[in-house]
Amino acid sequence: MTSVENLADASVETIGSALPPCGAYVLPGRVPDPRPAIAQARAAEQLGLATVWLSERWGTKDFGVIAGALSQATDRVGIAAGITHLQSRHPAMLASLAMTAQALSGGRLILGVGRSTDRMWTAVGLPPSTNASIVDSADLFRRLCRGEKVSYDGPAGSYPSLRLTDVPDEPVPPLVFAAIGPRGLALAGEHFDGVLLHPFLTPEAVERSVRTVRDAADRAGRDPASVRVYATVVAASGLSPEEEIAVVGARAVTYYQIPGMGDQLARVNGWAQADLDRLRAHPALVGVKGAADSVMTRGQLVEVANAVPARWLSDAAALGSGADCARMLAAYGAAGADEVVLHGSTPDQLGWLAEQM
Image (cartoon, rainbow, N blue to C red; front, side, top):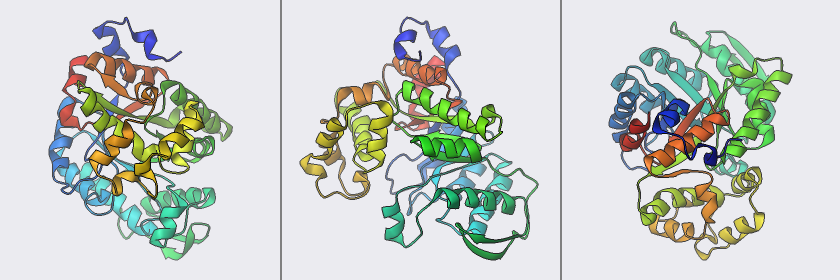
């Protein structure tokens, strides 16, 4: 069992030794100014975190630009996209971005990619992802990063002649696939270097997800342990109930209300679809298309967050005291996560974690 209850009576020393490697997001949510990412990444390195992650958004959170900046502001911490997309850049441009960042950082880049929704790609005039296009795009990326000349015509597009003129003497960055459902998890196990699990999965759901990934890797003739599992956990320690709802509950709403994504989260966690339907029927969500936090104010999100079932937060996020949060992170490690990626709190807000390590 991986439940937090099994760690309830553990000492601080026991919890600390049970903590998996941790990473954290910089610039979570919508931001008008990307410059705080520099101080946040430095704080992550000082804290001893394994990786800093960026959830790319067009406007102020371009992964290539920020990865370059962070590579010069830090010396050791990994720099990861969590996530960008394979089809949002031309294959040669994506490979060029990755290898330039590899050269600048000394090989610290991790490229997390995802499928996103068909509706999003239709809106911006790009083709939706298919399993075939994702697999082929990953292969194109790796070949280009190795300096190969590529001629390709298939599900990922038509490219008569591609090649990077120069590539640094650095390894191809690990490709990590973001997944929730069994097909996406299996795809990660079969073809990727890692999987990035979605926020608001319970430790038990993470344990099942790890099993799906490892089994798929084994069936594909790969070493199951070679596929690294990153569990994303929204963490907020020492907050008042009002602040907790604003930080954690409002973020949960942005995921649960998205058609497909919210349904998958509920299904994977074993939560009632009826509860999700009631949340989506909230008057403030009626007519909202896409991510709620792109069109709603913080106050509006908090109003909706008060309608989220309490256990959807307590069972799938790290809340409460520093020790409580650490117990939850240890539970995710016991569930098989190779690294826990903290979301919601930036690295400079993780003093409680330093006290538990």
